[in-house]
Image (tube, rainbow, N blue to C red; front, side, top):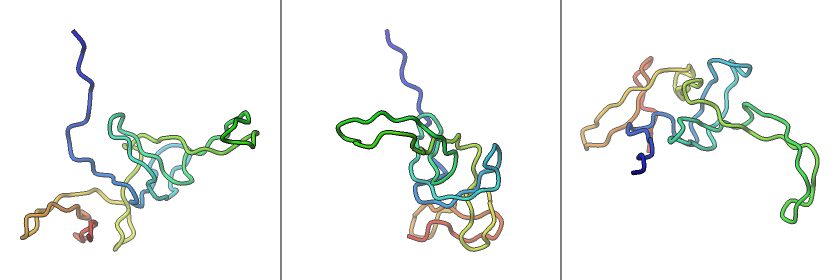
Amino acid sequence: MKKPKKTNKFKYIIKKDDLVEVISGRDRGKRGKVLRVIPSVSKVIVDNINIVKRHQRPTQQEKNGGIIDTDLPLNSSKVMVVCPRCDKRTRIGWKILDDGDKKRYCKKCGELIDKD
């Protein structure tokens, strides 16, 4: 009998296109936009954060070989969402609005993060 795959069953706090700040590691203090969220392993890929150099052999799709820079995934516990209003990194809370929508809000200033 096969074991079921582990998945995170909670609503993910960090979403694509959020502005986040790194709170630990060699890129601590840097900010960037989330390019991709990988909830199955609890990781995020942030633009221009956690960049490594990779040696790439030329292939038919990628004619240029050499050393290229790639963004590696970061653990989602190492980043915090930056509030667009108060411009500080903050914890995220959830509010249920009058029309029944569930939106994220900044715990520091109380402003909604999800405007749409």
